Image 1 (spheres, rainbow, N blue to C red):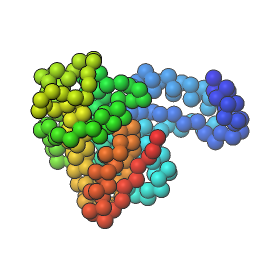
Image 2: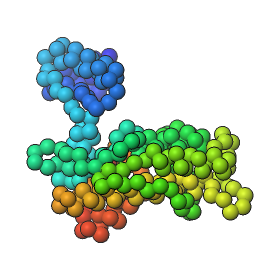
Image 3: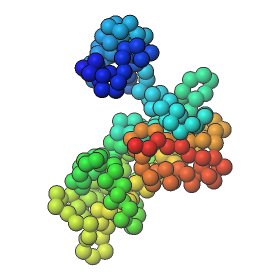
Amino acid sequence: MAKAALQEASLSPQDVDCICFTKGPGMGALLQSIAIAARMMSLLWDKPFIAVNHCVGHIEMGRLITGAENPVVLYVSGGNTQVIAYSDKRYRIFGETLDIAVGNCLDRFARTLHISNDPFPGYNIEQLAKKGSRLVDLPYVVKGMDCSFSGILATIDALAVSLKLNKAEQTDQNPGDRPTRADLCFSLQETVYAILVEITERAIAHVGSNQVLIVGGVGYNERLQEMMGIMARDRGGSVFATDE
């Protein structure tokens, strides 16, 4: 399998400097499987065997792609929500979710509304949110540098059920003066992204940086980048984000 992958990429073992694998964090069985395969390749090809932290991998890839020098990092994905900065020769977590990740919150609400997974739920929520305009009141939970999304998800799930918007066959129009599916997506995005901008701004003030780097799958969201950009410009800074 590894040989076929190298051939497809027009590479030989001599072109490979080292074998890296994700040591964590992540799901144990998957990490173990990859570690075994990577160790085998390392032994077969006599290459250094290097463990990589999943979160640091995202950060360093983002810095390489964007050219960000010493940013405060917002790492947002389906499994992680953290504000990270480099301090005293190591990456340190300045704030994080206390329960579910922001990407998990978005994905689970997409299932409530029967929103397609193609290409992925967060993208489809983003497109639907662009059609929304009514901001529904949702919990806003920030505790110092940390945040929480489970209460937001429970509230908006219950609202969707009460409005009968959790059916498989739906349109984006509602009779009367009720919120639509688009309004709920719009409200969820505005709320959770405002929370992320707030805790990121606190980290910027703490470490004295003027750069923000957004990494992880949720970081592709244009509205999140826009909101973070407004905050950064107000502080005389700039935002970097990885594209697809």
